[in-house]
Image (cartoon, rainbow, N blue to C red; front, side, top):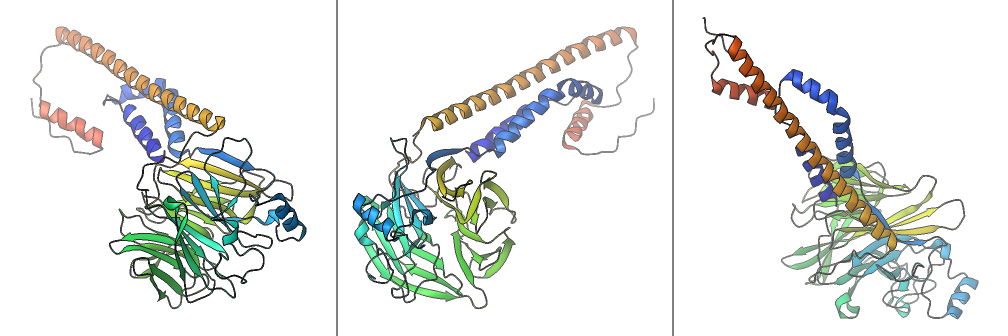
Length: 469
């Protein structure tokens, strides 16, 4: 949609440019056309800067799990192994009609990897479904069963439909990488154990000639970890003198391959394309970064109520993309976000408005650029699921139609005025020829044409000397 907005803006700009006329005529025309011109410019700028977020779900009373039984839920609430107000979405991935969330391993959070549908026929928001199942999670105190998921963190889906899950582990269990094949009934393809415990955050994938490679920076450590799927091996890149907070992003495949990493407790952003160097400063320390196929970085920040962007084809400049509603209280992890293969940005918001219970929203917006790994099958993940989204689409379509109609009307009106002016000039010229004697023309047609071009393109040329009569 951002691309579409840019194209609308270009069309509007082209439609309001009229043929060159004399300065006096320009003044008269502008005096009469200024309100209309301002209206068109306002419409174009509004479209160019708008991002339409469609609400998908709203958990006003907090999130909950899809429990095996109601009795198990009541028991967990009673013994406080489940505290629903501590649910905090951290990372997200989207594949076809499913959204995957990793939840922060706070007290009273029994399951840290869940899924939910991208749409629902019910007016009530769905509960969170344990992925791949309840019995694959170490419910309760961590470290009892190291063969189960301890604390899910970064999530990614590759082009073949495999979900990569970075498991932070625990004091007793080492960090792991779980890979599930979503095209084969969520079958577990790989369980890889690293040599260290904890200190992980997000991960990114790179599709190379040698297969898939995963990167992640260790939180508060001077290390970037690399894992090669084909070789099923990992190694560590030491970054002496620089510690990371784990937020990491990778430039898309159609751009030079560069890792972007954020420094611990700092807004400083670094790039790594063989040499690590600082490239800019965010307004805060990011908790999550992702890059779309056009090279735009989206960043959410620690304990901040907004998301920012940066176009990596330009010099670093942070631009505000989305902000929580005024009056909302925000948390340390207010947002989780992910891109799907259809150019849709999905986002959860965690906020509080007056009450002590947190509320959650799932939103989506078409941004015109997808994730770096489109699936092998072409399946849209942007269905029209609610009456509100349908109405929003109708409003956008009507607005775009009105905008185009306005620009066409402006163009036709400008051409009509120009035609009337030419007719008036011709009649006046004919009258002057009857009353005034013919004088030799000291300026050639080529010189006139050159002078018009200079006026159009802002070139100042000294006038040629007039020949003596």
